[in-house]
Length: 353
Image (cartoon, rainbow, N blue to C red):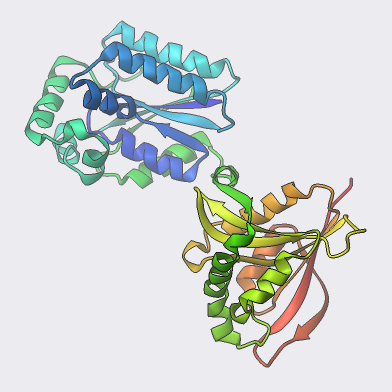
């Protein structure tokens, strides 16, 4: 597992850059105040040993996950040998897993950091900074008592970049870091963790029906097709719910129902062929990769299936693109429904080789 160490003086933007970096990579952010603030809140004062123990526990557990890496922010006093020992010990934990260590040093002048010391994002995440007068003076004190910026050539680590982000947006700095180290784009793994398929219970059919109507109504208003799921009565869903070898699942994201999918076999004697019908995501959650993730989850639920089949609207190019991204290819003839709408079939055949 990799480690991304973001170093820099107070209010230089370590946390904010880390937040932006987390959006575009498979790294998770563990900023320094995530342990400091709870301890301050509970004990009413700084407890260094406790904060260190909690931090170590989090890191040890994180090393057991399958994330690409951790972003860790730290205000390092470069003139203290113990600080070098600490970051080297931390790096060794990640090196032991075969991971890479990336060092980022952010620098900005004090005037700029004093401005950032009162930004909304900083105060929302760091309650101990909300007394601005105290926080400003602490920042100035730290600057005068510790060397919080490295000297030229002092850091000799292989993967190191120093960025003066005085005039940079956090997103721009994050993109510079990503490009400099050649980090891969964020994968679908995060959604695969957060999205689950949970079987619909019979008493939940009315809610399923409500969600289906809400999801398909925009398409019905566009095409006015008589077979639209938007105008299906709840009895039709109950009938489909009772079909043997077919199962409805709610698509759950972070514990909330954001859509549904029905999968299974139309022929009880042919378990190598499965169908998806219907699949929908509520309008407010569309275009977030949830449909793609739900299909990938469906494949995992029925690993023995060799051929998946579904039907969609030719004119809805976004849907066609989604299914093609999932490995489906268009088959068969076009099936006109009315002057505005045509149905087409897609299949995904497993490659046994």
